[in-house]
Image 1 (cartoon, rainbow, N blue to C red):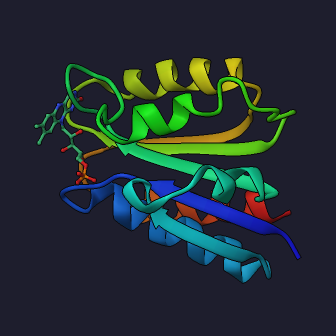
Image 2: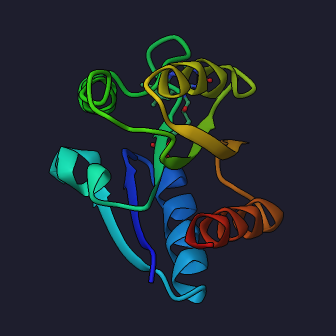
Image 3: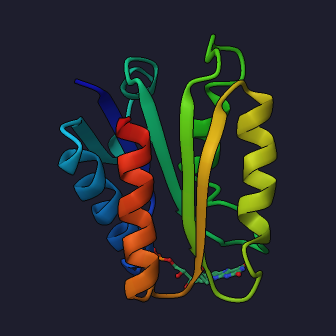
Length: 141
Ligand SMILES: Cc1cc2nc3c(=O)[nH]c(=O)nc-3n(C[C@H](O)[C@H](O)[C@H](O)COP(=O)(O)O)c2cc1C
């Protein structure tokens, strides 16, 4: 059984509903999922997982959330990540997903193997929720 960690930040709920669907997708493949707001997450939640999903909105001039998510991600800079499978997901208002492209460069630089990404404009539609579920399944395989 795969251990999956889903770690996200959300204020208005758009990223949260994506996280919920990633969790459901991973659980439907039999994975054990730890899902946490980044404020409650520990580095070990990620290092002990077989695969991870990180989620954030675009904030603060097209960047991931800076008070909690950015410093959490930075913790992995010097840790042995060794190609751990990762999915990045999030929501934006107007940057068309540019924040996620930048984020991908950072986490790949830290050694994660980004196998999927999903950036949606504001609230996800049904098709995007289904895509989130598929990303959860992908992590669990
Ligand atoms: C204070 C604030 C700052 C924002 N800054 C950006 C931004 O720089 N670029 C962008 O594309 N969207 C920006 N947005 C839009 C959010 O990324 C978008 O509403 C997202 O769906 C919020 O996710 P959440 O509902 O999970 O909190 C901002 C929204 C708020 C409330």
